[in-house]
Length: 351
Ligand code: HEM
Image (tube, rainbow, N blue to C red):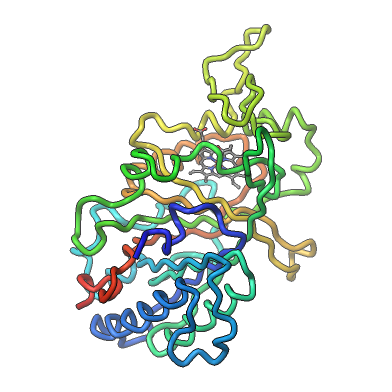
């Protein structure tokens, strides 16, 4: 099955549900293999727009939403099933960072279902079916839903904005490029994950009430790009290169030292990855009378430890954006490659 079915090297969907499950007590490797047999059939049918076996609402099967489903495994799963030797080298949770204010339940998880669609009804139905077929093996740890919305800026280029109003997801490796191939898809290491990738999920809450109080130039210099069309400061178009050397007539840097894009620019090609930024909101609860808004930051790399982590550490040290953002959830997963016809998901890991 083509990689498109994973929903990674693919335009941002309108809706995502990230569902993290923990194994039920006593579940063995053989049980997880049986679970993956069930999920493989569900996923292959659902991503073709067909109803899986025993679907109580087959009318909801629909290919029009470009449904995509990926399955990932967290560090704790490898530990619980004594499969640590089958995890990619260095694969672990993101180490504690000074900026983190992590809140249960949004931390870790044994197995991730990443379900995406452009149609919210279809998405909800897919999640329900996958949870139904997972119930005898695992219980829900957390579910985080996100959304995106395309808008058009320069020369008809479709972009996505986050809840701070910024054009987000611009400086990413292009789909079907050598960069994407080399940065994202796993090429070596344990055989079962070759053709898969690694994913870090960070739930990052935004302090929008204080962000709203900034002027447009203050907001733009915090990121290093313009709010209107996402062009880098010093440029005019979205796809103008980010010039970190450029100076203003005053001699000050055009993109300040503290700007997010300067701090986030990796020191080498190796320190790059693919970001899929989804927005989230949460209904008001006790202590948060205005509800919660933020970014479901999803980054994919063949080796998070060497590609994402150095950048994340640098941003945790110093990034003006940290004043208005708080990481409250964090989890990592190895995403299994999409099984081909007749194959079982992560077969070589659990068989
Ligand atoms: C709520 C938190 C965040 C917000 C609102 C945010 C927003 C943005 C925006 C607006 C841009 C410029 C447009 C683009 O290239 O996408 C950007 C760039 C970038 N961000 Fe973030 N970001 C956040 C968190 C993070 C985190 C946690 C990381 C990595 C650890 C990160 C890594 C990057 C990278 C690598 C770039 C491209 C930098 C370059 O131009 O080379 N961001 N971000």
